[in-house]
Every structure is written in structure tokens, then in C-alpha cells.
Length: 539
Image (cartoon, rainbow, N blue to C red):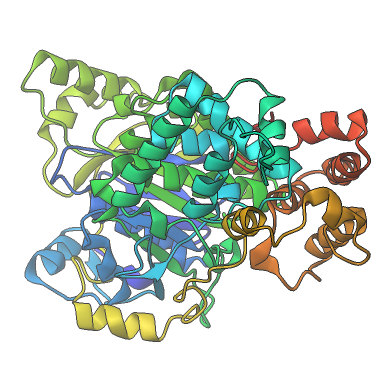
């Protein structure tokens, strides 16, 4: 039987995944139709993920993947021809050729990778409410806080900005002849209804819990630029971006919210491209069930919409979890490329899960899919990839090909060497504490800062209509030298420029409206996308 080098096994716009009665291929042109990798712990999901990531990278497609256990980091180092790898290659009539892939490590905590940061404004109130586990009333107050920040030109960058803003909107009874330096801020909040001290206190306590979990390291500057995920190396192969998530998994809600924010930012920033010969980026979401656990219906609706629409941006999303029933049916229906490892049926619930998994495949008369799922050995899988005009192929039982890079984690010394040679070294490694809402409010309290109205009257002060219009123009055309010091309104304007042109006009009119007090500007402003879920969520 003829042999094929693993290194060159991907051909004609396809990625070679494994082999059963016939080879199993994932078509690159259909790689943006999303996918699902499932199976019980220890059945080979991580290896399948690595095989797919290697294939996309070889084809010049950048990859982003969360590494829960550290095993995926081996993709950065040359593979080893161990006995079990050589044996599997021999059984599949393949010649093993060791390989390695250009890798960038990221870490929300900045310990084992480059720090990943976002500003409070970019996260937005919906995802923050989800992150803080707020009820409807508390979420409403959080929305009020963001609106007050918009109307008073307060930039929300980090958690101390949000804390200071929440304190500033608490109603205050001034003593006789006492001047409240934040009276205009409190008045803005009161225009949206009563804000109680008890509700503010609850939100503040939830913020403290979040800080104790290390989330304060995530919010701040310099904020992540997604273009750094969309790079290829000098050989034209896609960069593999690995999120170090072993510590992040101790805060599962932070993990899920962070990845959802990242996905929504991709949707917001990338232009419409339709169906390409290959994806612009492939996004692997490990432990995907955490995204959907206890999520309110409104959030599930938006997740479904993002997954459905981000395909047109050239992004493929691959969920990795233990069982297909972890993913809601409406999202599951969008996942065309399937890899199913073994499931165990020890309890009635397990048996129902096996039946549900079997029913997600296009039936093969040669296989009893439900029975085979319980019989699969380590490294074996049932697969069904999209073919032709996007229809699923019949389910096939295969042996997954061995990866060409190392299987298993790298050493701390190897990680350090990779980070020292990283293309983004030094860009994100040092935090920046820009002047924002916290500093502005402190100056107001101390009597050293002008009110928004006074700032608007100051010639050339940058706080009035001309200043805001100039900031918006600078944001649109890239002339704003203070990229990392955008106000909340400017962040919204940036979000608008990434969407359709009529939203740009709406954003400018909204800023004008706020300065001249026009109701038109205010109403359009309320409709501007916050940036939470791209162009989908609107207030």
C-alpha cells in the first residue's frame, strides 16, 4: 500500500483528519460552517483538536484555541516519533514527518502568555451583568451607569472606573448650603428612575468577588487588537494562538464570558466576506458547555445569532465539549462538521445522551451509530464533515491521524523561549493606567476639574462638540493618537465604524445631539450598538 507523508497529507483544499474504510477530509471552503468535537474525558478530543488546528495552520489559516489542561501547548514544538505514533501511522499507511507550528501564547492573568485585556466599555453592560450574575433590577442599574457615563463623557476602562461611577450615581441628600460636586451626574442617573444604595452595594460586592478571582487584570489597557490573531508566519502558515486557560477555568463564568466577548468582537470588527476558499480564522471553544450553563434566553438568542452570522465574516467556530446535548439545539443545528469520540452509557441519562448524539449524524446503513459510540477506542471517532454544496456526509468510523507536532505540554523553559521570540512581545506586557472616569470624578470632588458643560464652553478644550467630533473622525480615519484612551462614546463610535455606514452617521448625530440637547441625537444615541455583541445587540 502506498504511503503518504503526514506533513503533506492535506491537499486540494482539504485537511486529512483520519482514515477508516476510506479517508476522512475536512473541506477548507466549508471550514467556516462551524463544527463540534465531543466525547468523554480521556477519549482523544484534545488530539482531534490538535490535528484540526495543525491542518488549518498548514493551509495558512490562523487558529485560536483555549488550552484547558496545557496539553495543546505541544503544537509549538517538533513532534516525537514515539512507538504508538509510529504504529498508528503504519496502520494508516502514512509516513510520520515531525513538524511544529508558530505559536503565540495568551493569558488573561499574564503569567504564562501575553496579557489579554479589554476595557469596561468594550465589554458592555449585558456581558458584565452575566459575568457578575446580576438579576434584572441590578442589570438595569448597570445599564443606567453606562448611559450616565456616555452623557457625562466618563471613560470606563478598568474596574476602579466602574466602581467610582457606581458610587457617583448613588442619590445623596446634601446639607444646607452644601454643594454636591457630582450633582449633574446624579441628576443624569435620576432621569432614568430611582437608583438605590442597596442595589449599588450589591453590584459593588459582586465586583469585589470578581476582583478576587483575578478579573481586575483583564479589564484595562492596552486593550487587545484582534488583528494580532489574524497573522501568518513567514512561511505563510497560520499562527496558532493559544489561550492558557488552566487557571482561568477556576472562574468558569469569567472564562465563558471572556470567550463570548472575544467572539462578539470578531463579529463586530471583521468585514463581510461571504464564503471564501478557506476561513480567515478558526476559533476553538473548549469546555463549551460553560457558555450555555444558566444563560438567560436573551443571551442564548444572541449567541445563536452570532454563531449563525459570523460565518459570513470568514470565521469558523468549533465547540469542544463532552456531549452534544451540552449545546442548545438552535446552536447545534449550525455546526456542520462533527467529530464524536466515545461516550459511556452507565446510567439511563447516559443512554439518552448516546441516543441523542447518534441522532445528530446522517445515518450510515453500515453502522449502528448508537452502539458504535459506546465501543470506540481511544483515538477512534465517528465523523461527518460537510461535502459538496454543504450537505453532511454519512457518518464514518475512523482512526484519527496522529499529530505531527508534540503531543502533550511544553516545559516552562520552552514556553519562555517562544514568548521571547513572539511577534507581539512588549506590546501588551506592561499595563497602562490612563486618565479615565476614576481620575475625572476624583478631580471633580476635589474641585479641580471642569463640569461637562464648562468643558464644552472652553475653546479648543476637546470636551465640546468640536472635540468629540474630532475624536470620532480620528477614530474613523486612524488619526487618533490616543487609541487607548477612548471615552465610552468614542468606543461606541468605533464600534459603529466597523458596521454599516448609516450607523456611522447615527453615531455622529448622537454626539452632536448630546451637545446641542436635541431629542433627535438622544434617540439615535440610544439605538447605537454598545459593542457587546457586535451589530446585533441594541438598546
